[in-house]
Image 1: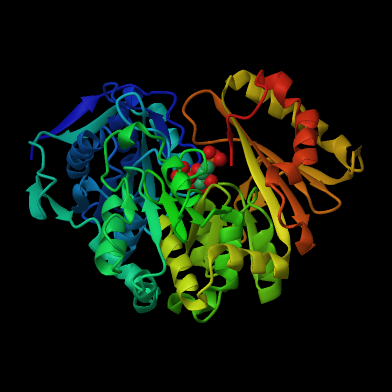
Image 2: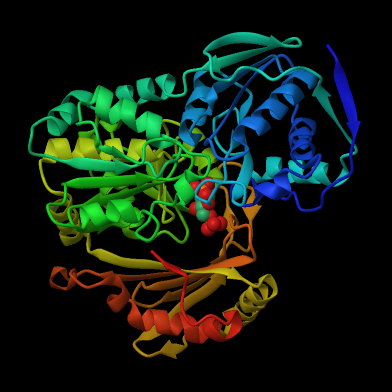
Length: 544
Ligand code: G16
């Protein structure tokens, strides 16, 4: 084995964010940049020598080059075997599934999720641990500490591995196994859902659906599941070929960026069901005919109907949602007599709850839903879950949602994003808000009176770890909320997120446009934080 030890110096910007390290491709292409981060992962973990690791990505620009580098570094660092997705493709949920199935010590996912790709777009690296989930904060902190002092990395001098042919080769002493990207994941889905009934629904000649893979990683998975296995007509999957630049699009499944799908579902002769997924396949958006399901409502509906689905027939142990997610799932949990946990933003915070069997379903307002079947959120799993429920209930999406609101009330919800704000201004806004926290309680704004205000802090009920400063909450006496936080996934400047929520029990008032219904809260959110003045922007860049 020809192992090279290369001298390097630290980069001081390698602190992982909400979900791994995300930077512009051009940053990752700097000499030693990727290598430093990968070596820091190996330097911060133990007992992996001779063990199995999983490797794959969402197929974005620089995926293949990064995989070759990581394979050679893994070989030089003593990894025993790497299972890599064919052509370097593995969705984030499939990676989690494969880590768990083959008892790997962990996995590396190459993705910047929903961020745009291509030479001028973003790239990202995420490390997942043996439970299949994103590394928890103590691990990402250890990696970051290593990046600050790294002075060398190890890499094997060898030729590139053929990533396009299934089978096993050797790289030094390490085995490299190119695996089918879809097979293990598809098998897991078949074990959870009633494929017979879903197939009946999709082939009954009445129900029509389409799914937008946004030229990102879910294309091959969606073709295999919906068109080949479940009998949906060819053409059901839109934009199903993964492209290195996602066709120039922004692979973020929301009403703004998944416009191809939105046009179809809100157009003439719209199908009954539509869904979209993001760059790496862990997010989902659910649409009915001319009807949008918010991610928070989606989690609530899945929880309320879980026992209709074979994999969840025995019920749920609990539900978990991120703090800014609406409180709609809490109402279902109360009805079911189970706990609903409120965690900081970041899927990594669900890992302990799932491992300890305290929660079965988890979800986030950021179009993420998942369960204890793996340790990542899972876009196509959510689509199958919805289809399984619709196949049993034989109801349109809108009717299902309206009946849900009738029973539980409606949580009107919206998120306003101010993207690419100057970082200093964004930090100033948050500091000023934080300074106001002690004085807000009891204050009246129009119809609303502040009941509490805080900077969210979370104590993990399993390991007792504490995560502070996770978002500023202003709660009102009628249960409405405004939450402010800065995104941990952006790569340019800062993104301010403002989450708005109100509760309406009266079903005669469930037909409002959320922006209308939340109008007063939106104005209060601006007044309290001086958003327009401090960001210099007169409106949000994205509203979901
Ligand atoms: C990641 C995290 C999610 C989080 C989302 C948005 O998702 O895994 O838990 O909700 O980012 O985070 P932020 O508000 O900090 O930008 P993904 O799909 O980008 O990996």
